[in-house]
Amino acid sequence: MKTSYVMLADGFEEIEALATIDVLRRAGMDVCVMSINDEGIACGAHNVVVVADVAFEPEALADAEWVILPGGMPGASNLAACEPLTEALKARHAEGKKNAAICASPALVFAPLGLLDGKNATCYPSMENLDCEAKWCDQMVVVDANVTTGRGPAAAVDFGLAIVAQTCGEAAAREVAAGMLHCRK
Image (cartoon, rainbow, N blue to C red; front, side):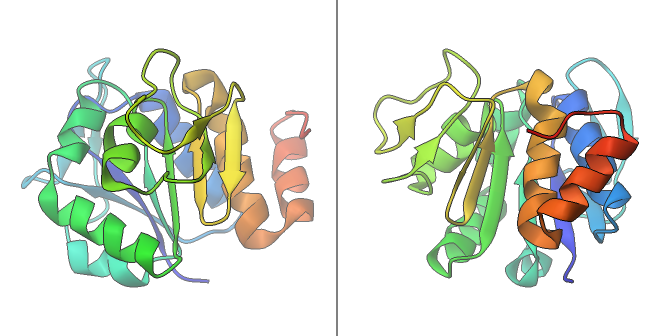
């Protein structure tokens, strides 16, 4: 299994980032936290400071299992403004590689890049970008081919479990969910 990267920028939503990282690691996935900030530290939307595992290396994303974006404001906007990241996401998408985003990031990062064109997706209510070609769904988590999207903080565990199911299988996702006393639907 290849490394998956959870990308952090100042203003990220802590629950979405940390719950996703935790769920993936419980499943035995190789997860690396990468900050787009030069110092490798990101301050969340609620002032939780996280030290990334590695400094920003956009070239590492090319061969990743997943590139995962938490939402939060202004975290999603900061991710969207990071051109090396957005270029890596577009290249991965063109190659059919797996990308995931939750909360504001599907609308603010994925949609403007065309990653949601022709796909079912979800995001934080009121963040839907009506100018894109996505079909916005009122669901907590939506998987459409190589793109997984989540609605917001309350969806973070299910978002992580959806990524685990696609990578390690549904049985692994159910096992992780059971260990967390979470009902896997």
